[in-house]
Image (cartoon, rainbow over all chains, first blue to last red; front, side):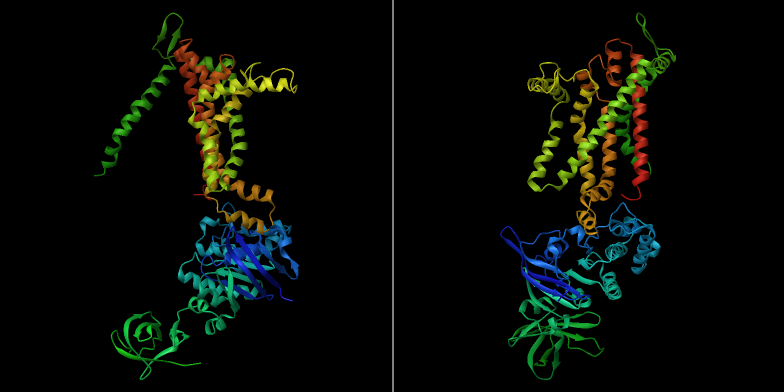
Length: 307
Length: 283
């Protein structure tokens, strides 16, 4: 029996279908991402698990128990919101202590748990600060500590890193993954960022128009996309001779598909090419190994392995 | 050109000085002048008027009533206005606009008209509400409304509540809508969410609304004049009577200056309190 089970989950707003029969089984301790463009129903799904939105149909079961019959306040889920939703009138420690207090955890035990949670996210020294006095990344950590301190059955992350700048986001991805491994909490992440989903999750659910297009490991979804939508959403892709070919799988060769380099963009660790061929514009990514690469206007041949 | 900012603000400063500072200074000076029934105002420096106001319990009663009414008006405005603002904030698009208009509507009507409206509803035996209530046999005698502090408080709460609603609403609009969900997810019931999460964040709005309502209630003239009349005076109607009926301008000036000073002290004090209590948390 799976730990968390979404069974033909459905949500309509008037005539609009937000989630259209989504089924998903999550194992205990697993990290699963709901990935898709905005309006694909991923956030609505998360809110139905949290209990802020009532489904129009279907069921949610947690450890075999019907979760929809449980009030949101009694579900015992840890949630990290996109805006963090910290209590601005409370210090970091008071924010984290709120959940245990609601659970009736007493003074000494509560103080210890709060200190441990803040230590886990590396904010032990900032316990007495108010949210306004913390940076975006620090606020994010407080939100994570607040969600984890109640020892939730599931951790729900709603675009938790989208308000951070690129460098901090990457650091937090690594840290988030480490924390999740340490604590072992079953985690559902909602994101529109395919790199984030692939970096963090055990499995991704690629969603489009309220449906799951593919549920697979990140590597599997990337290598064997089930639909053209998944292929195009998980990174760049070329449609060559009827099959999807990833840009980094195409090499410059002495023979093969002939073409002319239209543009060449240097991106540090790799080169991004647009090559004009008789099959249309082909995107090619080559690692920067320090070798000389064909320049713009050069005549090239493209080759790729057929698997 | 370091002097440019000062020169540029000079016209406004001159206007401000001419229409506020000078008359205020003249009023303060007036409060030290002598006055007699037959001799009129004598421009001398005496403390007679001030001594009279501070020793005669009549004036203490008057100021006591003024601030008692202002405090009650502030309290009721907060008790009714804050929830009203919260509900308004949760309303969806067309309804919010409509109800905002309903709340602000009274501000478009003259205070005199509104107060007379209350007088028509409650006043005397012929008042609509009293007639209905006695007709239904709920009460034997008409509820006293005219010439009572209750009447003044009821009418002024109605007049001043929009200021409280707007002030609290402004504070609530800065509230992250997910914050309530965050508290619920952590296991808080609806009452706890209100008391521990929403109310503390609305508090700066309630306090600044309270300062506005208190100041307006303590210095209100039209409503106390119509409902209280001559029988139940407050500081502003007292000053008016001294100026225009008794013609004892110096005594009227003392009352006016005292009301102003008391209000300034209360407002600055309240502001300090808000700054110290919430300055760190809310910017």
